Amino acid sequence: MASWIRLNAGADAVVPLVFGVFAVCFGLVSMVVKERLFVSDTLVAFGFGAAIGPAGAGVIDPAAWGNVHPFMLQFARVIIAIQVLAAGVALPKRYLRTELRSLLVLLLPVMTWMWLVSAAVIVMVFRLGFVEALLIASCVAPTDPVLANSIVRGRFAETKVPVNVRNIISAESGANDGLGYPYLYLALFLLRYTAREAVTRWLVAIILWEIAVSVVLGAAIGWAARRLLKHARKRGWVDHDSFLSFAISLTLLTLGVVSFVGSDDILACFVAGNAFTWDDWFREETKEAHLQDVLDTLFNHTFFIYLGAVIPWGQLAGSAELATPGRLAVCALLVILFRRLPATIAVTRMTPAIRTFRESVFAGWFGPIGVGAVFYAMVAHEELQHSAYDGLRAKEYLLPIVYSLVTASVIVHGITIPLYHIVSTSLLPLSARILRSASPSPSVAFRAVIRRSRLYREYASDDEASTIADRSQLDAAVERSPLVGAAPAKHPRRPANYGSANTAV
Image 1 (spheres, rainbow, N blue to C red):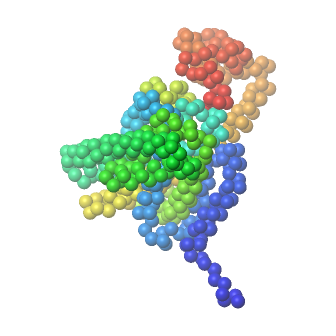
Image 2 (cartoon, rainbow, N blue to C red):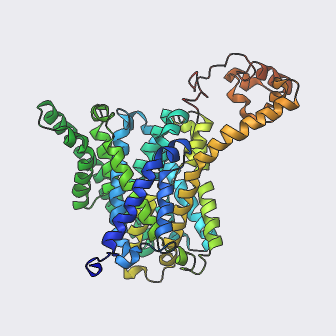
């Protein structure tokens, strides 16, 4: 009897087993993890994948199933396409028109800064040539829409992050994931051709065909899909389930059509999503349904579990001569600190969608590196197999650097909100109690702190802030501040309830 029982330990049984275990176990505590601890679910999935992969328990080994790079390329491509189209659908009515200036600022000077600064860090840490560093930096220049979801959705986002900041983060992460191709292929062409030929090919093949054609196709597909769906809905031809899943179907259609003509399918998906919901009709009709959120969660968890298992943790540091753990850590730290934050702060006044300094700091910090970086790294890895790129050191450093930056971003941005929550709910109240106990008057302790801070401008009116020149004037402004008891001064660039639970970053 026992000989009839055979245990199946193959990948066809183990893979659904481990993914099912994670989905069930995480689902049972997901509210606690996401809404009380504010921990990113992608961080949990990524950590679980690393724990069950070859570097951990060894439960699954994706490398044993074959070449992981082609599969990773297509897997990341589908995940990004779904996310950027969902980002386009979720934006308010005619958002690309109303916030065009903000998007252009973030997509042109800020993204170029992110590219150049990342390249400079790679040159400094790994001593690569600048063009080779530009190639690797182009993979990590786009922000990631998957990791950005933890910032723009959920209880923390709804209570702490203003709507304008959530919208601009979603729009930028959706658009710039499709704009990684110009940066990537400019570096590839410069490594392969003369400067003049490289620029000519880049302008014709990438800017005109990849970018311009994809925008036109995406807009046409989104507009036509909206008109057809409205027509079918009005005549009762569409059932409820098909209506809710229409955005996923539109993603696959856009991917297929734009890929068929050899253009930028990721950018086309974002444009198609925005054109599809240009009048807010579809978004309003489906805002009570959560099918898209459910599918996003399943796809994202699956991808990050797979990514955590695929990364060769034991071989990552030794895959290139200078790719030591220390250098990879220093590179990740410098890139996270200087890749995006300084540029976003610098263009605050040029970006209408970002209204205050605090909002610019928040938007600048949350520019995560994730699925988009993996996708472009796989594209670059595939291109570098051509014999014209033989001998380039970038072939050895590409994946270790990108994987280390993705890992650092998943961890750092995944724990930022929990750390902020701990500080704001525990340490700051404790500091306030200490100040109250040490000073006979709370306002005296508050004035002692505010004198050493530039934040008094948040509590004084514009006229007062422009004329405050000495300490006595500052004390007078502090006495009138809302924290001491007077009515809050209105600010022309902020809502009257700025700083409340519903609007404060």
